[in-house]
Length: 328
Image (cartoon, rainbow, N blue to C red):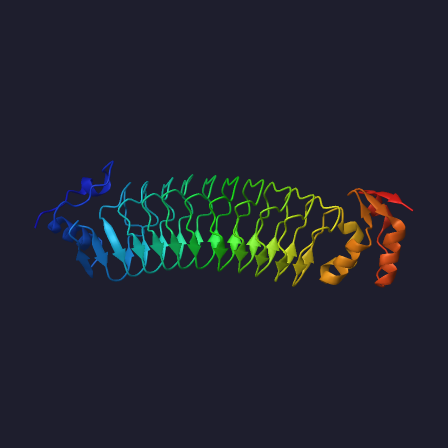
């Protein structure tokens, strides 16, 4: 049997795919790949899982995969490229903890979860088109989601990157969408339907323009620079957390199914007595009273009328004066 020299496997500066069927068989034996078919182009179809996790891979994978029916893992190596990875994976795909800067060469279809965190990704160009499970690309250096899958059956985790835009995101997500801890100035390009929660906290947002219109779980936009809720989702089935912003009124407030948290906003000094458990009717009524004018002035008589009409406790005027002018 012809043997492949070790340096070809671990030290090559470019992919060094086998050139004969005998070499394909030998590499498969080395990595304990057993149930497979060799195609005419010397790529292989594997019926089961491929586990290359912590197998000492250098910069490149040394086999050309076409189809893997089970899971495919090439995590915890030193890969700089995904060339040679399968085009279709029936289970999960995991390329985490490598030295990747791009997803070029990754599968086009993954029916399970897709994990690519803890690399050096700056681009998703060349990424896959369909993920049946979760897509995780968090904790990288991504500045864009261009090239991300357009169909995701589970969650998308793109938090802890350097994203300045959500352009390129899939438009419908069955799970949750987490883009917190980035540098987003806008939500333009974000998914428009998210069946789980949507988390965009810890960015540089000044408005919610472009946010999804329907959110099946919670919507979290805390720790931004929001001065208005314009553009927020119309309906949030879960909780709405927008604490630590700069909101001075409740205009454009969404219909919220569960808890509301807007502490550490100027407007909280007016509504803290009812907002956490407030229903949509009460928020709408607060807006109808036109208590806040021009974002910086409180009409005291209207505030008192609202408080009395709803049998609420009068908020602290001294606290209100820290944020608004008061007209008696």
